[in-house]
Image (cartoon, helix red, strand yellow):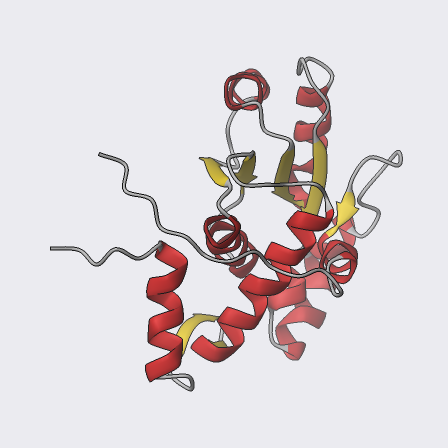
Length: 187
């Protein structure tokens, strides 16, 4: 028997009972359940700020990084649909997934941004691109090393006025209220 709760509500329940427990960790950078809820709600507000509403699809084209988790649960929090695709999908696959899901937004790491831009040329509707950087979630010493070694290649993104950097995206939703959470049975 499963409780009549959304996935977000299950995480929220864990945060209520164990706020200081570790929800996830990336290279030693730990996020507690309390912090996770704050991140989820910040992403939810920012998605609403972009016009995402209950039932809208958002494509998450990301590896297993914190922004992907935050986004997945935020979409559940606001009643939107998370269309998960592999970040190494071919351009034609990205086109197919964006068209079939009618996604209004795609969230992508900087290293796959140019491939998504190429795909958007053949998508049959407008899609907003949000560009996440893994170095934003790394501990300081690793952030510096990553930026020097690999991240410097991606510092120029987003390009051509297409896309919103994740950190700027989060700031857009600061004053937006979140909707009530509802659970609907799909039977």
